[in-house]
Image (cartoon, rainbow, N blue to C red; front, top):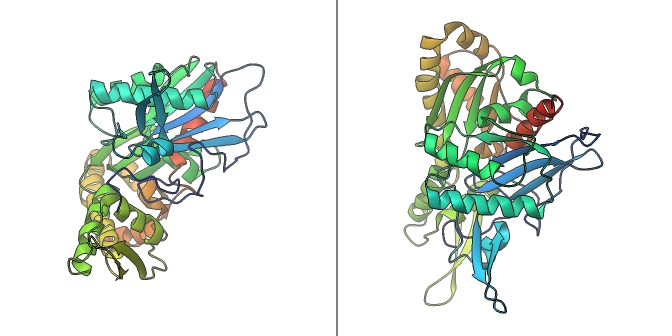
Length: 380
């Protein structure tokens, strides 16, 4: 089985989302009607630098939006002819140099100088390869994490990349991700609503009142990464110790087979150390950890976040609960998980609630950031 974090996936995030398989780091698999700025104005760009995958939305000349997605990692090697250091990033780095590929945002932010430098190198290589112009207005999504140094490092990564000369601004990831969930434009900015971001490194929750954050909440104990760890342990237990998988394989099981609507047991094969192979069937090891995850999300949202929100902002709390809750993040891509969250939260609160998700929760933060960038670019 592959080493944890080293095996490239089929162009999917670690958080559980699915995407078409491609052979390139940056793809153009999705177009959305938009109006690119004319008259030489700054190009509005949306960015989400994720712990495992980076997503960028950038307008093309035909007025559509190009979606750039790649693993947030890089590796270096010495050119055999010149001796110069060469840099490769994304899927190619993970595939060709799994023994020394570097993921510099594992906690969600570049927390120290070394990882900040690697992130700058990675992002600069990425935007250069995609011909994103300097004359651009860049909005990037940031996690709800109390880490001033890490957020400052992330700001430096964007500002020193050679893009965003017209404008660089950051907005909360849960707000950016909610924008595509709640409308076709920026309707979310004018509303009062709740946002739940189911990510790989953190669970985030926040109420928004016309773009203002109310009672922002974040925890690293209920995450997609923790689900991966539990799946790996559950597989070992279900197979009575005959099969051990790493977290990368566990994540792939989650992404490919996790389904609250129509899960079906599946089989896989591993090579035995002494030769031969062993076929095994998984019946419970994927859905049991996912089932526990939803329960834990509901518990954190209902008893921690919403309790604090009600104590601090009772009227916005009442208004927000009467409106759809925006659910984003890679874990929201698992079929049926949003409906399951809606049902269980309603039971916990003893009232009806509605949860909605964008069409592509894995891309939503960058998409929402691009919409904000487009609005800000109009004013420049």
